[in-house]
Image (cartoon, rainbow, N blue to C red; front, side, top):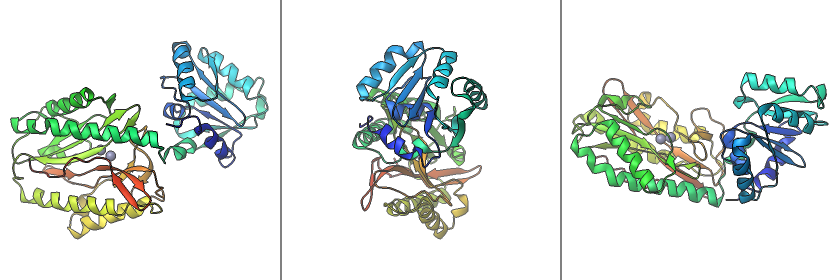
Length: 365
Ligand code: ZN
Ligand code: ZN
């Protein structure tokens, strides 16, 4: 992973973002730019230098991680009050300080504004910025891709390993736990997000939490999960059934969603908008007469966060770039009855996309 070059790419964007320096307070962005994985800290990036501010718990870890990533950045360790004093001094002469407006608490912004009254004085104005670091994170480098790919492989193997347990009338919670355990056992640092196992009528809830409900033969179960490697995540959904689906409506919906997912995947290539990919899925479901049951967007970027840019949803003007990692995940939901969702994680290539999540899409066990 080439962490060291990222700060340079960020500096090239500061002017466009309307600021002379950026205070990065969103931790996942701090991690992206420096390799630092602590639970508290902020990073000030100026045109000519950068400083990572964190507290005593992370003195050793932060310096080791900066060194390992080869990042040029000075380090300030101290309590929050000390960090604010350092910022005030460092920002002397900086006219416009960008803040990550969508990720800074009101109280934090007030504290900052109050602290910049000393050396920096009233000459530093605070600028609201949006998605400055997030835009850099969209296209993945080879190292990032390798991590996401490994996460996807681990999830594939884990599902193949535990799938047969569905025949034993396990509960949703038991099945989720076995899947999580298997992923951890096979090298995942963590799960990508709380695993979703939703059976029968529960599958009508796109973000159901696993319950104590036993999974019965003939009913659909939506399993949405992923593994995390070194901060990078995979995301996959399969809809499974022990035996044939008891309901012919559900069986038809499985076919419709499979076709819609293929249509969405085929629409992926550099230069298309998130809206166009979404439309490809939506039109396929519309031809099957069930578009109104598709109640969410088609997909999202995946990386250090499970949901990141670009958005593949209705009206999204985000343009896909080669090297972006995204999901395609159409789903249909019939309240009180059940639901179907199929999702893959893919990387956009020069003339299409390559699927990273490779588990079979056969519904019937
Ligand atoms: Zn998912
Ligand atoms: Zn997803």
